[in-house]
Length: 360
Image 1: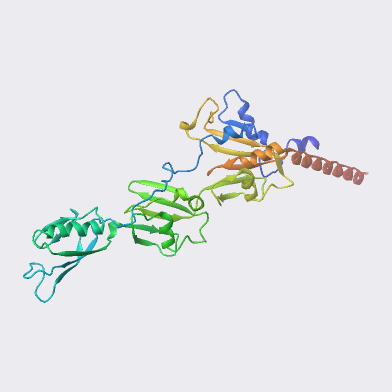
Image 2: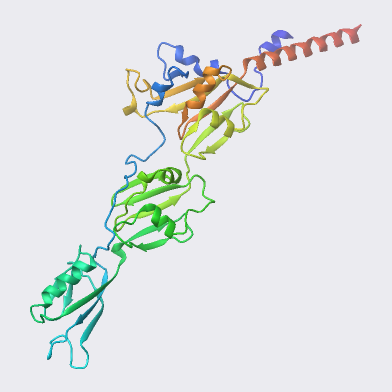
């Protein structure tokens, strides 16, 4: 009976640690096993971070002009005052002439009667007013110009999703920043999980989390005309497997997530099954990340192991950062397996005794 039980495969919900890492001891291992301790945590922390696609980082803040700058597609209202008798610009009853919604053309100029094209793109409204007045001085030395700006699409930024009022926002000045735009849009919706802010500028995309943006003024990037800001929830996740309270795809509630926090999100370890000495984190690195000097992993696939029964292991797990696409595996306790075998053996002996009694 005992031989029969020992020859059977007992049902269980997770692998043993020894089963997972056994191949690493072979002559030609295909993955690297790293036992995480407080002593080697500084070195592991310097290894490349995986699972994040943002290769451009986030632009630092800077200061811009507090005035507008005229761009192609903007419209200007021009009022010309001239008190001179027989003026070419006004008539006898009215001492001013008004040109409303004059659009700045693709060449950056507006048409003004008697002086033809006046190039004003790239100028502030005050500078454009002075340039037009200087050109008019050739035919009307006493003329005075008043100019106001209505910004067009090319002088605005787009705010897409994640706020109460998405849309195109004209830049109030060249000192318009990301947080100001988000505030004008009504703020980030509280229903978004770990919101991320993406800035698209030309052919480059920058990305940061809203929490990092809010905690440091250095990330309050200066906007440029044509920028697009997108706010979305964070879809980065890790996989929880094994003898834990939850086996599922778990989304990151924040950017920096420790191994201990990940175990908590998994619902903790199953008291009757899990091996606290066998918590594994499976991670895959790019080939370009590999090194042989210890400053980076030696192999693409790495299994990090944790022993949560010691203070050293607990501190290491608290400082170890989980990356997107990691797999956190709580292995099965070998003691539980032994207890199951003993229980089955005891049951078998009990059945044997009962059978013998009945036979007698």
